[in-house]
Amino acid sequence: MSDWTAMTAARLNDAIEAGRADPRDITEAFLTAIGAHDPDFQIYAQATADRARQEADMASARAKSGTRRSPLDGVPVSWKDLVDTQGTPSESGTQLLKGRTPDADAAILSNATQAGAVCLGKTHQTEFAFSGLGLNPKTATPPNKLMPGHVPGGSSSGAAASLTHDLAAIAIGSDTGGSVRIPACWNNLVGLKVTHGRLSNDGLVPLCPGFDTPGPLARTVEDCALAFAALAGERYRAPEAIGISSLRLFIPETMIRDDSDPTVLGAFDATVEKLKQAGAHVSSGPMLELVDVMPLGPDLFPFEAWQSWGELIEKCGERMFPPVRERFEQGKNVPRNQYDAAWKKLGEIRTRHLKRFSDYDAIITPAVAILPPEIAKLEADHGYFTERNLMALRNTRFFNMLGNCALTLPLPQTACGIQIVAAPNSEEKLLSMGLALENTVAS
Image (tube, rainbow, N blue to C red; front, side, top):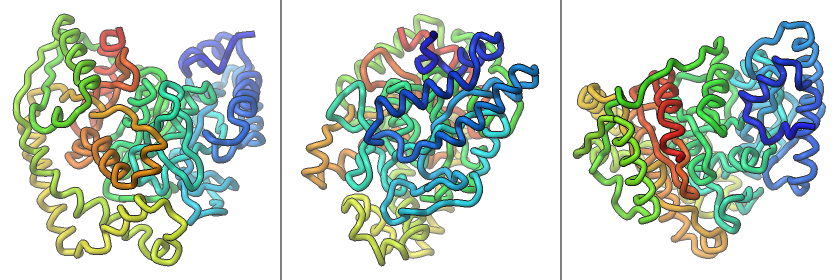
């Protein structure tokens, strides 16, 4: 029997399409693996075995009749705990929402189900998705398979772990300040952060509505492209081929390297040399927009987060991990006019940023500036947690604020990645660039 759980989604599609695999057998293999390798539910918060089997039965029938709906028809997928799932607890990683059970699927889950994807269940995350480290002492901290004893990255921590432990073919997470890209990077996976508004947020537990974006984590760029089309409810079109020698890439010299781990910088610099040798046109220089947006973050993210959950936290906040609760509470002291002024200034910076870098195909940076910290040290020292969390989010959050879409690709070094940043609403071109660069940066 083939090891279906170790295959990419694209190869599972090939096997189903060719009649070498039945979606029922594939789904059963994943459900068996979840029972064997996640018996204490440290990766999955909830498994949806009954739903998965029913969806696999229907996918099997479509495969036999030649009426498959998409390349993901019959492919098992995991879903972050903040994605509403009909009849299944969807608690956004917090005890404050314990027992919250929606009566309808989120729009992206509905789209993926219509495309034939099989829902395996809900994966753990950090509380309300408001941390980039992946530590959650209140529910579960999923294991980092590459660096045991270290955090897996967050907030889509279980999403990443479901892939590295072969418990899903694709994982769906969300990214408000880096929550897809950080766990993807720290688990040597691919992660896609979409432009805000490109995918529906309907039925997602909110954090910061002005920045929240759902998106896939996967083993390959091809799988991310398959997932992106399914989440959008669009017909899949393979990304167009693009040559590395045609790419014009820009490396910011402003702030991106400051206080970064030497291992991360060494991996990134070696990758840049590979790209140059492959013919990419690489320039570097200042990017003052990064300096300009940095002070706006405390006026934007905590304010929106507090507006979303402040009333509940005032009542039940003692049940939260204190450093996460404290991040929320920062929003109490941000006046509405200060928040509005920050958005106005951010809009001006975004306009300038897009104009300045319109001649480049992409901006490239290290995906995350640091390596995963140790769990024990983060739990013992809340000041260290706060400092490492902000550092983990730095390189990714810049581009949430600037409005870009972005992709992280794994590098050969453990827990290191390269972030490729493209103009808003250019996900198709971004995925094409990712396919062009994937093998070069991984070698």
